[in-house]
Image (tube, rainbow, N blue to C red; front, top):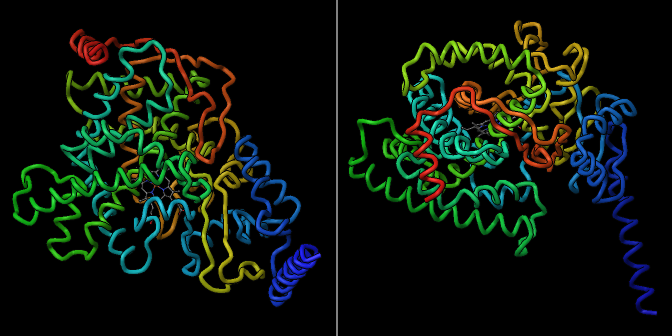
Length: 489
Ligand code: HEM
């Protein structure tokens, strides 16, 4: 009897809460759509479509049914789905919409640029933008080149078959670490590459800290990485305070942040710097490795595009002496290759959409968006719309011949507005350097012609994109021996 009363009471409370919420929202002119089953809403249906790579279809079905502004509920939050260039402009530039990260990301990365706001965010963005601006990238392009060559020598030269995604991740992790840590990069990668992978994988997981779950493993890796970076940052801080840091060479990112702090240019703590280093490494290497992986995949099916890229890259290679590193001028000449990269970003954007939270009640196209609601826009909605990109599923780098023909806010692989990706130039140079060596040295053939990919929610070819490699320009005997020696040792 008591049990029945309890169930009835719980049911009444549930109905009361739902109707109360309904009465509360009735003061708003909410967009069309439905919030689905409480808490669950459309979460599983959307996640399922991401895993099956049918998310673009999923969004288009909703847009067809409800229009360019509709409400739904994902990850436990009422959410407004917005579509079209005007919506993208609204999301990226409206002051009342705050960048939103998952609870998992906040727990894993602490107080990084991805989660900061207010004055701390301003200070961090300004310092990071300073370090990543084109004039600065020019100063470490040689470092990127050395690291790319080293990775290719280690992981590609001796193999007949490679899985592109894990190798691209390894390469981009090595490049960002060489810039962030300087001399200590090798030790960090050796000790923590697997932990960075686990940390990256946990960012969109269910945030309950139970061992052996994605999130549990991510939290353990996060603590291990934080400890290692903190030790390095403390050592570098000692050198900066005693003015014993290497002033002759270009400072690594940690030293740069510590120098700025010692000059009073920002008031971020050492712990803030450590968390930001973690955030930047995660933001930088997962995205760029996806771009490189999918570029290789697309080029396999596009022999004409590959031939044009090869011509461009061979010309650059033929004008350099053996061992000369690429410069920013060389990268600037890779115009067609960059168009092919942008075409890859259009068709398969590594960041599939942007989430924001309404900091106060706001209006969009006559509809109310109540304070606390989430707002979401998916990049594919405009990237794959034939009104903005003719024959949108066709891989055609020449559509970027005339950038001004692309309507504003319809091509946004790096986001837009004040939270736009600060690593755009870094990603461009890194991708071009990597593609230069891959295209000039190898030809590749897909091991699984029909390999599909999923969004988990990171874009992932289901088998990691294994390819058979063939040499175009064999390595020098010394390089081949070195690589063999490292592998057999
Ligand atoms: C192909 C490569 C990359 C792509 C497609 C990409 C894409 C993006 C996008 C779309 C955002 C904005 C998300 C939003 O507003 O909702 C973003 C933010 C960010 N990206 Fe990138 N990114 C790439 C490479 C990099 C690199 C190389 C770095 C660092 C060296 C980096 C660091 C960051 C950081 C720190 C943020 C957060 C900025 C903020 O919240 O103010 N990204 N990225």
